[in-house]
Amino acid sequence: MGAIASLAFAPVSFWPAVIAAQIGLLYLLHSARFTTALLGLWAFWALHFGTAMYWMYLGLGKILGLGAYTSVSLTIISGLIYSAFLLLPWLLFCACSPGSRTRLACFPLAWLLCEWFRYWILGGLTWLHTGYVLQPSWLSGWIPVFGVLGGSLAASLSAVLLYVAIRRKKRLFPLALVLLIWGGGGLLSTIDWTQPLNSSIPVTIVQPEAKIWLQQPFTAQERDQLWNQEVAELSREHWRPGLLLWPERGLRADIDQMPDLITNINLQAETTKTALVTGGNYFETTSGDEFDAYNSIYGLGAAEGVYLKEKLAPLGERNLLRGWLGLFGENSKKLSTRPATAESKMIYFEYDGNDFSIASSICYEIAWGSYLNAYAGSANILANLSNDRWFHFSPQLEQTLEIAQIRALEQQKPLLRSSFGGYSAHINYRGEVVARVSDTSAQTLVTSVEPRTGQTPYAKTGDLPVILLAMFIWLLSLASSKFMRPDTSKHPAANAEVTE
Image (tube, rainbow, N blue to C red):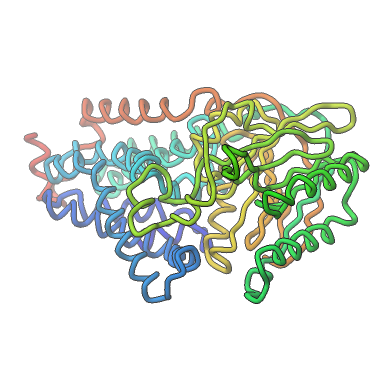
């Protein structure tokens, strides 16, 4: 079932597969004893992550310099350990009487808490949330209201109700509830929670190629020079009023050369009235020759502001793995992070006499919906600058784009993404890809964006309402046996439910 659930995610992107997998999981575990159910869930999550995120070994190999065999082995071991931690939210489900309506009622709550739990366990692996695959479906209407977790809850509730309908002779009531969930999502999807500012801004998104990283004879300084030359060449025809986006670390230089590089680029952007939004290291002297380096986003020319990256990498925040085996240790040593206010996370720019704001994020931060939600509500545009070269030619590239679509939908704001080694794209406020590059080669994407103002319900309230809603539905389900009572003639193992 775990492998079937993976078919819902990119590159296959057959979203009904995740609901089918949940129904299959219920069929296997609803009447299972505690230990059997727990082992079944462990196998489910291990297979799910193993088949949908097998590409993690590519990043481990490149970041840590490990061989293929060691990278694959470490990916498998870490996947098994991580899946074991994910069993914690499922203990209540497994503790319920086999075949009982209580266990059925626990399923959507356990599924939701498992996804929410991933934000915190071992620092966060916010990948493969069910809601990420729902943008093409009617259930996507719940996402601006409750966030990606709201989409996940709607899907898991649908799976439970469909499972009950399959088991019962009287199917009308559970099917009516499914129709209510889906119809409600469809109606919500017609609502524009944010409003356009009636201004179309020309945008050029630059996507350099990652080939220079494979040319080992070059020194770090020579690679930086080659990189800056490539970015400059791709941008040569696009210095004009409007937005120009360069990817993560689009400006490359050491601490001695960065000030001059920024001065020269800023002068060119000011002269052409270009609002340049680019990644680049931000250096801060601490004492003497010591300094902190921050992976950052600069606003230059007609743009202003500096955003400092806060989230490092998957499983790289507040966790044991940062020290264990030096996982992601190289990034941790080179780059610092620090919390910032919502205002300091914005890049501001001027176009045609009007001022606009951009809620910025770097690379993996796009997967942190709650983090982005804390400051994106007041922005007019979202921007994600990334470096996806670690996972070149893997499903991670499409999965990241899938996640970016949901971030745009949560806020109902357009999202611009500039990447190298990945896919650059323009996503509209409904989470639809308006324009994207065809591959990972060096190219520019020319489009126009319509800024929006206002806030979605999710932007105002965050994740707490959906957690409370899931708990309320759970309690309501326990209080009612009308549609949860199984057909004991077909499922003798469910007799325990009647006398519970």
